[in-house]
Image 1 (cartoon, rainbow, N blue to C red):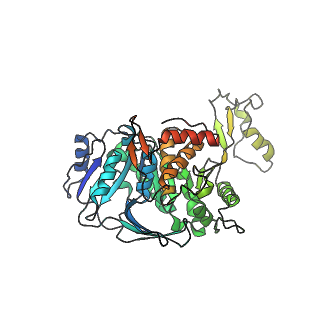
Image 2 (image 1 turned 120 degrees about the vertical axis):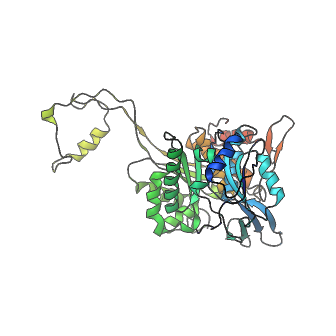
Image 3 (image 1 turned 90 degrees about the vertical axis):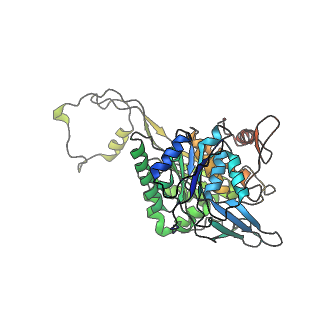
Length: 444
């Protein structure tokens, strides 16, 4: 994925509540921008979620006779921000959602109005010397799933250096990129965070692999990326692509749940002894979370010093009893009265399907952005301390709002002062979904 050569010239500002759009000299150094943000009071804003997905203005071409949709807010950045924003009512929690929007000379004012209405910590950057990143989307005749995409203007890809001020210190960071670029981004982000705040806690990294590089030749790079991130979330087709498969049932042509489960098992089994989490987005099948188990150590017991004459140097010996050795690793009683073992708890891991919110196609108008929206909901749930299964429920509910129309769901406020999206209170839909699928979900 080649990045655009254009810089971030022009005006930059934070779209929060109230909307702040300070004018910045295009030639100003980054430190000057930091000073502007401090003066505007944005520097201290806590951010739960930020995405490095791009903002794109879409035109969507459907099979005839349905007319195309023009100037639609799109891109992985927009939809993942939507997913987080759904669970972040204004005016307080909405500010914990961060994203970056690069506005070109052709940027429609109506879109600016929509972005402002969300009251998020959105970094708006205006550059009249370039066009806004735009994309063409086309669906194959008779299909609502198989979509073609191409850029129609130069794209403005985001890097770690674009995470300015509070965005850099977000609790959860969404990345959509190739395996090697993911490795580079994680390293760069952690370095920048440590440089800004030496004891900065590690964020939760959610990696969405880019579809074009979900191929067998990238499988090794994928496995090398997993230890660096917290959640890897391909869709069913992308996961199958790493394995050289299509992930479909050969008899029905539908998404194969068996193929998803087997691919997850193969991928996790190839990894060293550490806990990894895969969340596979599988369209009408919902999502599958696969987290391999591991050992959790409890409080350390007081260790007794082993007499010097009984110490054995040199590690494994030719006559080592391997069965006894591995059995001993799992014991939490004293070993022959010499060493008090630490209390060890075995995490069995997670293997679970979480069904979609919409179980029929009646409410599904356009699936564009559903996967990105899922990840925004999942990421902000994890940032707020939710377990992975509950986070998947947040993700599925978030996706349900994204696919009910072409473009974004409609934000309004009801007579009780509660936010509604498409006329629905998000928390009520989440509770109803949790009860339906047997998951204990709580508010935010």
